[in-house]
Structures are given as C-alpha cells and as structure tokens.
View 1 (cartoon, one colour):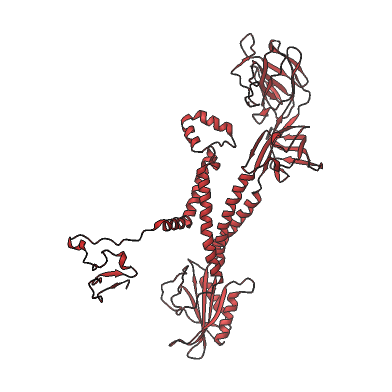
View 2 (view 1 turned 180 degrees about the vertical axis):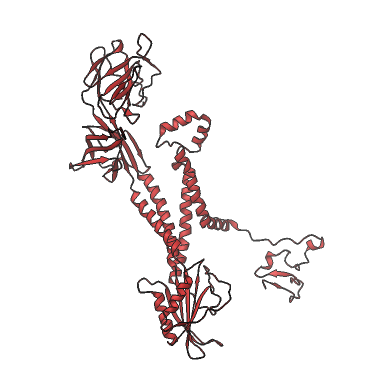
Amino acid sequence: MAGRTSSRDSTPDSRAGTYVPEGIADEFTQGEPGEAHGASSSDTTGQKPERPNAPALGLVGTLRWMWRQLTSMRVALMLLMLLAVAAVPGSVLPQRNQDAAGVLEYLADHPTAGEWLDKAGFFDVYSSVWFSAIYILLFVSLVGCILPRSAAHYRALRGRPPRVPSRFNRFPAKATATTSASPEEAADAVAAHLRGRLSWLPTFRVDRGGADARGSRPAAATVSAERGYLRETGNLVFHLALVGLLVSVATGQMLHYRGQAIVTEGRGFANAVVDYDTFEKGGWFRPGSLVPFSMTLDKFESEFASDTVAFAQARDFTAHVTVTEPSGEERPEQIKVNHPIVVDGAKVYLQGNGFAPEITVHDAEGEVAFSGRVTFIPEDTMYTSRGVVKVPDVSPGLDQIGLVGYFLPTAEVNEDGSARSAFPQPVDPLLVLEVYTGDLGLDDGSPQNVYELDTASLTPALEESGERVKVLARPGETVDLPNGLGTLTLGEDLPRYVALDLRHDPSLAFVLVFALLALAGLTVSLFTPRRRVWARAYTGPDGVTVVEVAGLARGDDAGLQAEVDRALGAVPGAEAEPAATGQAQEPRIETGSEKD
C-alpha cells in the first residue's frame, strides 16, 4: 500500500486509526506536538482538520525553482518563439540605424502612436532593452538546459546496456529459434552481428554476458545491446548550434560595419569613414580597424534590350574598377549585380547606377559659381533621373541659385511641353531644370539632403504667363539662366556613376557553420532510431540450443521486428519457431533510472 495505518501505536500521542501517507513526517501534519492525531482542538468544535503545512521554499528554494523553470525545454521554446515575434516590428517599422528619414516621416504621419512606439524602442528594436532581455534569457536558458543534459549523456555513453530481462513475451518484437550450435556460439554470433562490421563505429553497443541457472530457468549465454545514442547527440549538437548562432549574430552586430559610396567614372574613394556617403557600424567597431585600401571606377558598362519583346529591359551591368592595396599593389576587378568582389574581408556590391553630367554655372558677374558632376537619381526603368544643383558661392550681393529638374538620356518632348525618357541609354540626352533664387540655408551649418531642394523660402523664376521657367540644355551647350542670373553649361561627356555598398560582418562564416550544424544535428535527432535488443541462448530439455531475441524501441518503430529477425538470422543453423499468439502490454524505454 501507499500508506500505513498506525493502529499499532498505543501511546496517547500516536496517530491511532488514522491513514498517514508514507514519508510524511509528524511535524508536517495537523495538530500540535503532544496532541493525538485526530484529537486536536479543532475536532472538538466540529471544524475540519487543518491541511498539512508544507515547508516554505525560502530564498534559495525560490531561486532554484526559478532556475529550473528557466532552463526547461518548454521555456526555451517559448523564448525562441517570443524572440521571433519580437523581431517582427523590426521588419515592419522603419529603424533609425537603417532609415532615419523613414522614422521621421512615420513620426510626422502618426504623432500620437509614433511617440509611444518611439518611447518603447520600436524604432530601435534590435538594440532595445526588451529585445536584448529576451535574447539573453534565451541564451541562458539554452546553456542551462544543455549543460546538465550533456553531463547525463556523457554518463549514459560510459554506462553499460541494460541487463537482459527475465521475460521476453511482453516485448512488442520477439523471435525464437533453435540451433545445433552451442549457447556460447549462438550468443557470440548475435553479438558480432549487432556490433557490425566496423569495429571503430559499432552499430550497437553490446554487452556479452551470461546468466546463472535460477529455478526452472537453465543457465544461459546473454547479449545486451543498445543503439540510438546519436539521437541525443544530435539533439545536443542542435542546441549547441543554436547557442553558437546566438553568439555569432550578437558578435556580428557588434563588430560589423557597412558603408555606401557613390563613385563616378575616373574617380574613386578610400576605405575611410569620412569617404563614405553613409556609414553604419556596430558598438565594438573602431575606425582604426579599417584597412586603408582605395578603389577607382575606371569604366561602367550597361546593356539594355532594344527588341520589341523585351524593350529597355536590363541585360547586364559591369563596373570595371582598380583596387589599390595598402602596399601599393593594384589589381583590376569587375563588379556585377549579385557578383561582389571581396576586399579586406568585406564584400563590395553594385547597388545602383546612373548619370552624373558635368555642370558649370556662371553667375551674373561672369564668375564660376559652381562646377562639378551632379548625381541624378533614376526614377523609372527608362532612367528618367532627378537631380539638384545648389549654387551658394555666387558673387557678393547676388542671390543664391537653386536648380532642380531631370536628366533624360533619350528625351521625348510632348506637345504640352512635358518631357520624359524613352530609352535608358544616352541616345538624345536633355537636361530640364527649374530655377529658384534666395537663401539656400547652407550658411547656417544645418545639414541638408544633397538630393533635395527646400523651395519653401526660395522664389521660382516665372515666365510672363506665370508658369515656371524651364531651362533646357544638351551636351556641350551653354544656355542663359532667366532674369539675368548667369549661364549654365552642360559638359560634352556624360559620366556614369555607380552606387557601391561595402559590407563587413566577421560572423557570417560562423553563422553558416552553426546553421549547417543545427540542420545536421536536427536531422540525426529526428531520424536515428533508439533501440534495445536482448538475446538469450540456453540448452533446452531435448538438448537443443534455444535462442530467444527481443527488441524494444522508443516510440513507434516499424523496423524493430526486422532488426530482431536479422539478429536471430545471424545464428548459424537457426530454425525459427512459430510466433506465440496473443498480445502483451508493450513496455517503453524510460530515461533516468530505468528498470526493465
């Protein structure tokens, strides 16, 4: 029974006639010391006896309970799912480190919700406190789960297979045969078959032994075999790989850097923070870690389809560059779409391209107020490109000039005066600009977008009809600006530019390795069967050797009976006996303290 009745006690303090569960000490039951169980003061008033008082956990017990909960597999899976959910806002909402302008636009469009989201860190998800907390808790949970399981698995690997059960008729897979070989020979044959052909990589871990005669059971030669330890090994490899992924991603975020630069033909840039147009970096990045190489864009080639079926579709983009190492050694390279080059462990991608025509502006005094290549950003597949020219360095007393408009590689002007590009290549290029005058706001030191012109405080140049003046210029032409503001000259050549994206993440190789390890560990864990096979060979009453083999698997295993039959078939001269009818309750493999 699960309890005891203390009727044998005769003292007044005994718990006579009362059922008491085994293992419950007297001090944890109701009643004061010295009172007979069932005769407390509460019984005299007709009230129900008080419940047993469990001991308080205390601080250490509470911390131990919390640790066990945190390191359980259930909590680890919950944290993993929570981490995936927490990463969703980072892909839906704009992030400051990637799209600061998008964050400002979102805050302007949603002033109330945006303010609360900003306070909660939804625009800096991956560096927020709550995302870091989930990340760290998941890391601790996985480590706390893996370490004890690894220790238990190591002990299991060094242990012996479970002993041979006394009865085989209760197992789901079993077979019996007789043979003329001796019991020792039959057991050795079964053991050799289960070990397999490779001694350094046995199929089963085998324990060859014997059993003494006991009652009506004769002495027997026995075999205990077990396989499937790779299942737990794969499980541990999978979880260790997850920890490796977490560490690798975190390290990569701290050490990575990424820069974007626009380079025109014949010019280049140096691998320095100040030479990039935009630059992102991790918390542990140091500018001194950049290797001082340089890169020059020698030529850019683009190819577009001209047939009617796929008209103007891009065929190929190639940037011919020259990379100069710190040692002064130069080497030519080609950058194509999805085919980056590797320099100093960083990959350089071809992210975009366009036209950067040479524009020169003379002010009303005839002085050169602006001269340089202007980047025009394509807005459609025909490379209708928009650009801005800011002319702040005019002669004293003159208004600053702002020009905004489009560069059309193959201009097509409509009857209403509108124009667009009809083909991406510069077949008939045309520059169309509107003119503004006033204070550009560059003298106060406020940062501005070089690709935008704030016209709120500027005055547009208008025709007599009230329409804005449009300045049209073709390559090699010099045209007058309206209102005597000066002249504009478009260069004869039309240089191309490329947008290069340089990315360096030292964790990428580790992420790949740990991802492959996780996949391999999961595959081994899912498809490795866990089996136990036992064999007993003894001399029967008629002097013939009887061989009995039984198998047990964790979970459903359709190949278990075949495994048992193969083991029995390895016995020389074995003749199988008919299987016994009837079904027995199927046991299962238990972890921890196992009893077979």
